[in-house]
Length: 112
Length: 117
Image (cartoon, rainbow over all chains, first blue to last red; front, top):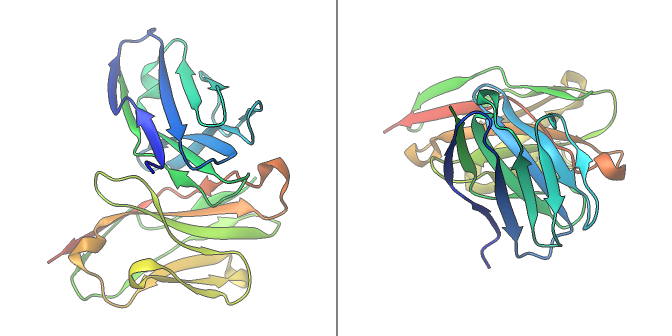
């Protein structure tokens, strides 16, 4: 039981490049979340998916898109990366839409 | 909109010292309250949570927190810290009213705790 997994762990992009961050959970959870963590700002919710087939914007959705591929997987896409998107990205899941969330190990993204 | 404020950005203590990390939130409705911890190189883990009932909640590793509704506070405490408590601590709240926003956590800025042996 791996919990919440994220790939890649580290990534360096140039401004304007695109990439997709992958997240998967094996806990049969219905809800999944993407956060970004920046120094001095805590974690901020980017998008979340209450259940398979639904997605909703969080606090900071601009510049991102998400896909809930199936119940297990929830990806985050940066279409045209910007230096302001340099951050650590965390995926989380919960059984239902719940504040009791389980977090993945994070992806450290640097945009040059 | 909800907001969470953690007043201390970095706290440095010696082992066996007592710890109190402040957390205040701003929200007009009823909230659930959480403390998460992130040890170096690890992902966030839930330390403790308050949903209702006894305002003094106990979590893992000897941590406790007290919800004071009148002060909109949920401070984290530990009587005697250990070197292994070195980590970043995040306070978080969510709207207990439910609906699709029930799972939306609002985090504080985080407090880095460094414990010297």
